[in-house]
Image (tube, rainbow, N blue to C red; front, top):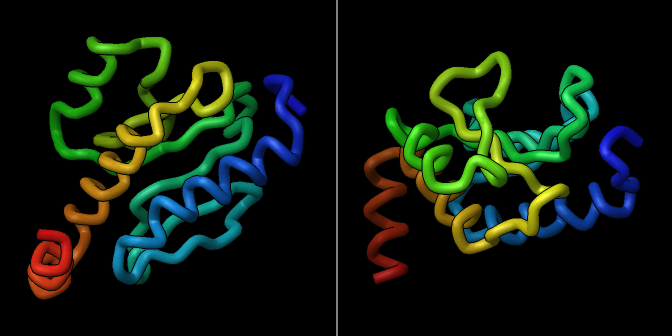
Length: 129
């Protein structure tokens, strides 16, 4: 495969991401165009992208608020990148750099919060406070 990873590497990362989103109410994962899409209802909050359009990356692409990408790029340009084709999203390298799973979990929760209903947010916050 491009980038040197194996199908087992992809599966391991998919499983780890599924563990992280398991605690986010309503989020499901589904295979989509050779990638894994994480959805809240019909709205996408993240992708596990495998050599997306031949970019040679095994990466997470996650929805983010304005300014988040620039902040992360300034802090760690080896770990974060500007994903192609989507604006206001953050690219997170998962293969060539050791993933920071706490940060990835926080990014996924942040994306979920951007899409979740007020009721879901209140219930989640009450359960996790």
